[in-house]
Amino acid sequence: MGKKMKESTKLAVTLVGFLFVFTVSSPADTYAGGFIAADTHWILGGSPYIVQDSLGIIEGSTLTIDPDVEVRFGPSRALVIDNGTLVARGTQLSPIHFTANQGSANRWGYLQFSDNATDATFDNDGNYLAGSILEHFIIEYAGSTSFEGAVRLVNSSPYICNSLIQYNAKGGIYAYHANSIKIHDNTVSNNISAGYYGGGIVLEYSDDVSMIGNTITYNYRGVKLFICDSLTLSENIICNNSGGGYGTGIYLYDSDFCTITRNIINGNNCYSGVYLHGCDFCTLTHNTISNNTAPEGAGIGLRSCNSLRFKENEITDNSNTSDTPGAGIYAEKSDNITFSGDIVAYNHASTGKTGGIFITEGSDGWNLNGPDTLSSVQIYGNDNYQFYNNNNFGKCPNDS
Image (cartoon, rainbow, N blue to C red; front, side, top):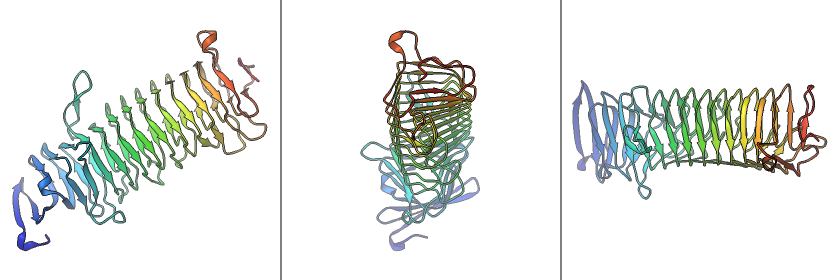
């Protein structure tokens, strides 16, 4: 079971009828697998910890992992926090490292927080107090199984912050019914997936989500949010993501009362920098949405939305890749859309098509003038038409 057996020490502890064996080899290899059913501490002196069999945290126990510890997983192996707590807190200079034991070609499975994992708690100022946390860690080369996401949250809400999630085959973070989660200041990069769920960060049925200060780049899809109400996406950099159907930058589906503010959404390639489908009462303010390419609505795409508010966004230099209109903004069946001080400029469409804003299929109640004359939307320098109203009920202000 261990290499260098002449120098190794075997520790066997019976935990709730299960024999959990560590083999510590010189200089410091520690082998692990099975269940953790009592509070356990992984220290630098035992690193690397090699997970030969999938590992579960049960019985309300806590696994604490110290800074600079390396955890290496065998092919398809996973760490599941089933009924307990994971406290993995590295530092900026000494992150915790979750990786494949046999190199990038032999991917491991995933790290999952399940329904009975202990959620993170915070004080009134939003500072972490207790519960499951992943802080200053690196997770890479996961994704050998059919499960989506290197980090999976299932009815669970750990705190994920200041970390690097990269080179995973089934996406970076995937959450399902994970309410009141905070995903802050992470870099999610180069995660691939050809599946419906894959991407940098994918959340489903998860409300009251805070995603702040993340860098999300070179993924199969940037951010996908499916039926997630009352979420905040703020100060993220979402750039150079490609593939993945709708919303290569940010895609919101049937998600209401959401705030998207002060994000940089640049260079994404497939379907809109920001795409909202069936979303009501959402606010987009102070975002820079530029250099994205898509078949239509390369900057912003809207479908079946109502009561959206835009303020002081810059939507520039986006390009439609097909013979369709609305390179800056494309909207259909979307009513009561208000702008204030936004700029829609230098967006590119094919000959004769609208480069600026194109609305169709009954979109009504558009206000481009803002609350006063100084806050009217600025539409200029776009290819062909600046604004095109393709509805039967008449022309909107600034129609060209």
